[in-house]
Length: 118
Image (cartoon, rainbow, N blue to C red; front, top):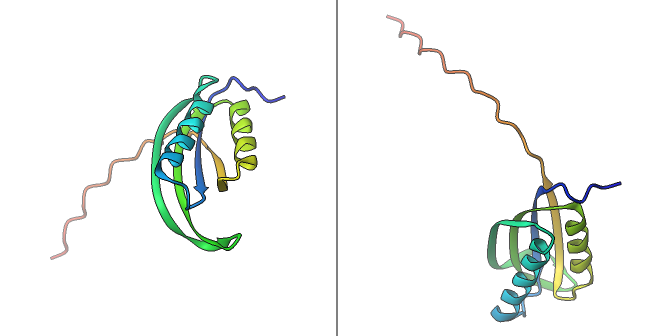
């Protein structure tokens, strides 16, 4: 059983259809943010990266509008978000990636530089 109350950090990249207006894109981003925060999630970073050329065509479309978000959320929120992205016809591609929390290891101080040979 998945514990949906554990908040983990995720990153998502969403590619939207390029013919969307700026108002439609802003509305889409706001709805996505509400979906994340509705169950206690937190938006850490949002970046509307703009229209970019795709590396390969998706359904004969060569450009897309990229949106990047970093957020904390529970597993149920991420599952709901994935479902919403799959059925939304404005979304060309979406990937949600769990970011592993790593503990920083202490770095040993560098040894003094060896004296130059004479």
